[in-house]
Structures are given as C-alpha cells and as structure tokens.
Length: 555
Image (cartoon, rainbow, N blue to C red):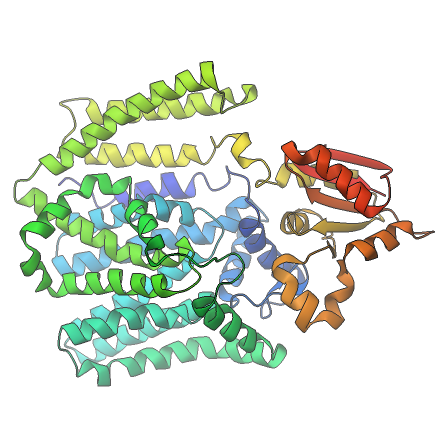
C-alpha cells in the first residue's frame, strides 16, 4: 500500500483548512458557538457562558474559550469560528498516526489510519462545522490513546507520565462537553481490562488519570460554582440525567439502532478503499480477537456506541468518539488484506465508484439544464467548478493503467479537492433560511439607530451575532434560553421576553422609539404568515421588507 506519511497532512490542509471561510454560518448551531465566544471576548468574562447576554449552561466553558482565542487571533470571521474544530480533527488524526505506528511499527498503517479518519464524510462534516464535537473527540481520543500507551510501558516513570497525560485530556474533555469525558473512557477501558484479564490495572492505573483530570477541571469548576451556583444543578440533572433517560426538546426518542446508519455510512467515502477489512475479519476472526490492539479498538468502537444508543435522546454527533477506533480497524484490516495478496475488494469498489461518479455527473447535467435547475442562473460557476473537480478526480484515478493500489493517493487527493470545493458550491436554495447572514445583514441596514429590536427564536442566534450592538429582546418564545429567561432567572431576564400581548402594548405605546420585529418566514408561507403576524400584532408596519427569508417589520 503506497501511502506517504505526509499525505494525511496534505489532505487535512486542502479539505479542512482551506475552505473554512467559504460557506456561510448555519443557524442555529454555528451562530450559537460563534456568539458565545464573541461575547466572552467583548465582556472579558471567560467563566460563565452567555448566549445573547443570557446565562447559557448547556456546556462548560472550554470549547467557547478556545474559539474565543481563535477569534482573538483571526478576527470575528467564519474561519475563526470553525478553526478550532478543524484543528481538532487534524490533531486527532495525528494521535491516530502515532498510536498505530507505536502498536504496529508500520508508517503506512499509521498514515492510512489517520487518512481514513480525515476522509470519513461524518468526520469532515463535523470537523468543518462550528460545534464542539470535534474538540470533544480529540480530548477523549487523547485520553484513551495515552492510557493504552501507559499500560504497555513497563517503565514506572514513563507509565505514570502517560497516565497523567491521559488524565489531562480527560479533564479537557470534561471542560468541553461534561461527564461524557468519563463515560467514553470508562465504557472502553473497563470491558477491555476484563476481557484481557488485566484485573490488577483496576487498582493501579485509574488514580493518576483521575487526579490529573481533577487538577485540570477543578479551577473552572469551582469558579463557576462560586459565580453561578445553579450551573451544576442544571448541567448535571437536565443536560445529563434527563437527556439520557427522558426525551428532551431537539432530541426526540428514537429506536436503539438509529445511530447505526451514521456510524456505518459516516466512514465513507474514505472507507471505499478499506472494504477488504471485512474479508480479513471473516477469514481471521478468532485470531483477530486474540490481538491486544484489536481488542482495544473493538471495545473503543462498540461499547461507547452501545452506551449512546441506550440513551433516550439521541443525536448523531454523539458517536463521533467512535470514529477514531473504527477507522483504525478498517486501516489495519485493509492493509492485511493487501499484504495477503487480495485486490478485488479494493479495485472493484473503486471501479464501481468511478462509474457511478460519471453517471452522476452526466445525470446532474441533464437535471440541471433540462429538468429542474438545482442551481439558479447566477450560480453556474458553482456547479461547473464542482463538475470539473469530479472529472479531474476521475481522470486521476483512471489514468496510467487504471484503478489500482498505486492510485490510492490520487483517490484521496481528489477527494480532498472535492471536499474543499463542496463547501463553496452548496446551492442557495439549500442554504436559504439556514444561512441567515445575508438576510440579517440586510435587515441591520434598515433598522433605525434608536429602535427596539425584537427577534424571533428562529433568527435570534444570527441577529445576536451579526448585529452590533446585539438586540436584547426576544419575541413570543425564548427557545433554548427558556430555562433562564422564563424560569430560573426570570426576575433578571423576564422583561426581555415579548409575548404577543406585551409586544402589542409596546407597539401601541405613544412617544416611543421605533419597534422592529425580525422573523424568518419560508417563501411558500410568506403571504399567509405576514398577514397573520400583522393581525396578531394588531398594527400595520410603517415599513416592512422581505429578503432571503428574513422578514423585517418596523412599527
């Protein structure tokens, strides 16, 4: 297998770093995880997370703090908001490289494992999106890799050092996502030690890990308790216990198997090059189960996945920590398949994929030009660029002797370019309503300087992040801020929530500043919803505007 050790680095720079600023921010997640760090920089308060000025206790502060540092370095940009997550994906791939190389002594195995991780569609999607799952995966991966490195090291001092590093990563994971930092390592390590009959390690190895994790986590944990005594009550009971055992808003109860498709499908398209691993699994099943490295990776993949599947509320992003071990398993299996002389399950899938790419390309041209234009007229450059990139990818795989093991670098570099361009070529029709930058910036230009701005929950994240100064009022519902605004801190934030009766009273008041209402309305519902809003508010706007699914009404 011809995989250069620098190929994962090239893939990472092209696919993950280069396109970070191309795609608009997507609501609500990306605006949320950009607005909280921006507010930290503005206020100087890096302890208590606040969204639109309201206490927001869904997660600890480290992920926001890291993004705030990125914004301090690169400015208040899309790139800065996403860079920590992309960097985390790259560092996770580096940890995979080091772990596989240490376990196998083979650089090509290590490079292939890290490359398969980066080339997994699910990892790429999350790693270039401003959420905290990629950072969490980095820290949980570091925790487990350093732990398993420690128990293999006979030197007491080195073993202790590795265990302390494992604990540091565990503490960082806790400060990013909470008690998941302990659940994933425990669900992996405990079954592995039992399976391997390494019972003595139960008594000797956890303590340095836990001690280091506590040292890392304690300062902020104590600070937030002193400043916000309610934090731990909400964070533990609502965000962990209730989410695991009860259906919560945004995380509807789902069947046990619902996370299997994103796990199985998420490793593609990179896994097209590793289907030979399943042949090896069938051929050497019992032998593989005797391998200590395989046992580690199986426990790490399967047990956390079952834990997440047992939760009542499920989100696909929960299973991100399962992708590092899964891609390592695929890499090891595929490499052994090729070493044993197998070629069919490498070349045939790639040939089929090559044919499907060509069919998809021609089919898309027909659909776009003759049936239903997915891209509008001003977007022709987008789809033509992607089509050119796919054609070049096909030529690179096919030229000079056809598809073979030697063409794997061509496959991965072509995929990196397609990944990167894909961030730019998303049709406006798909982004409409979710990418609210244009609509909200347009609305901001219409607002009088002294206006009272009331934002609906479906636009409040984008309005808060993009408008300067950020509006302080919510209309009808506070959305995910409901616990703080309507319940726990109602005396502090309750006057910022404008139900229809309050908003009607505000609009009807005399000698007041202009009142601006900003709401997202879908195009097919515009006429009906606009009429309903005006009827419910019992007032005709002095001026209203509809642009990119954002309705702005000035009363």
